[in-house]
Length: 298
Image 1 (tube, rainbow, N blue to C red):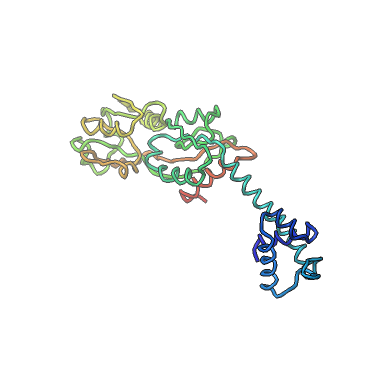
Image 2 (image 1 turned 60 degrees about the vertical axis):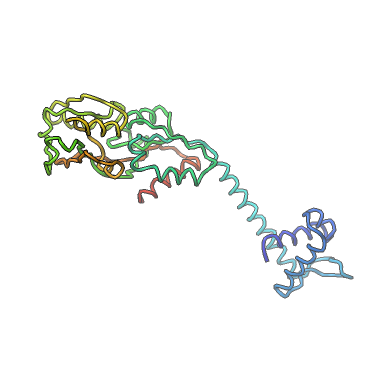
């Protein structure tokens, strides 16, 4: 027995056991309808209908019980299907996700591809800006959620903040740099060095500045850019240094570029941030769930 046969049974009763009218209503030939009912009775070895001269005239006691259960089951089935349609429709919404380009390249290409594939009707917009700029956009509600870095400097009473990934910053330099062969680089070794850095829209820029300030050291910046691969190319062909997340080593062909190990390196903590509110759309919940599951956050 399947849901279709139960629907046929209910339709027959509601059409006063008139198979001709029922077959027209459900767009099924009368012989096929009769055969379906017979198969159901044969399968369970019961008589569902009282018959007179080959015509259906009513329900047997067993048939009445099955009919009542079928009506209840079909109501639940129809409600389930409607709920599923409503959910599918709600996934057609729009969500704006802010992600720094570097973080996007290093950590989020796979998870975003999976998210888009799972919700093809949703309009998922990626806003690529530095973490410092994305923090501002969150506060002005220009984006719905963001992947930014610690410290977020955002109120935890206003924004949910979920740590997704923890690592640290490394120094990158050319193989010919005088610090390239040093096993561990002290911060004091960086006095007088020249740096190429992300610009002021990136939180890495501000975190590095703050570190130098705390050590009463001058940070000499000779070039700023939004492009991490440009920064690496810049150090490859010069004596400059740059700070980038350690995982970049897995994304970039480090020919003629080496990664220096800092003593007490700066943390690179990637955080999912979104406004606290009473209710979230289904696509917002799907994004939150996918991000936390992908990075193993419980």
